[in-house]
Amino acid sequence: MGTIVPLPIEQYLASLNRLGDPVLDDIARQGRDDAVPCIDAEVGGLLRVLAAAIGARRILEIGAGIGYSGIWMARALQPDGLLVSFEIDPARARQATANFARARIGDRANVMVGDARRLVAKVAGPFDLIFNDGDKRQHAALHDRLVALLRPGGLLVTDNILWDGEVVPGFVTAPRRLADETIAIGAYNERLVSDPRLQTTIVPLRDGVAISVKV
Image (cartoon, rainbow, N blue to C red; front, side, top):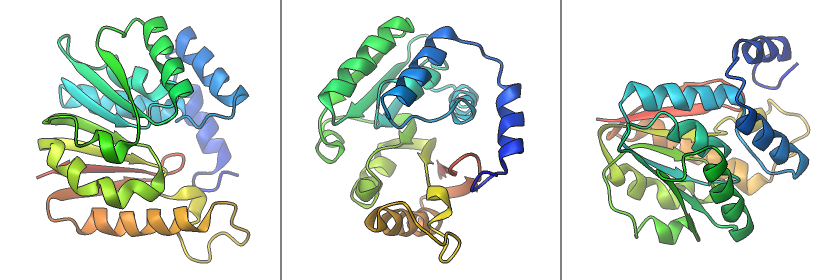
């Protein structure tokens, strides 16, 4: 069984996701082979639906990886839309740029290489959607700036907020995650739900997704 959602339920949900995109499928395999953390297709579908629902024209992504999640979001952009992705690893940034071109979204998606704490000061808002999937220990340092970059009614979406269940004290008897990351995510979750600028709900999909709307 899965840690958050029972494995048969996860498999059933995966069976319903019949996008069948060969480029995304290949990038997902590439991520597994190279041990690069990527969202799964169910979270990708959620991002696509959220971006489409708000008519997103500008999306910011913290943690491009090799471009998998960015493709899901960029394909839901309005025709004049733009995706900006931050990636600290130059090699992964090059892979993401190449994968954006393969997915034919290179004209509306670009990667900025560097530390997100520095890059957030270099971009101008407002953004319609921000996907926060970078270093968990940076969540606290980035939070206020990310909220400021959102337009009213915009969405801040954060992945991995249940951290294999390790944010729940005593739930996991043999933790595998780094303790400082677990502590950082737990503190971030409390900050999200108590921030008066946001209305937040947590979806126990895969490793947990927080969806916050700026009021």
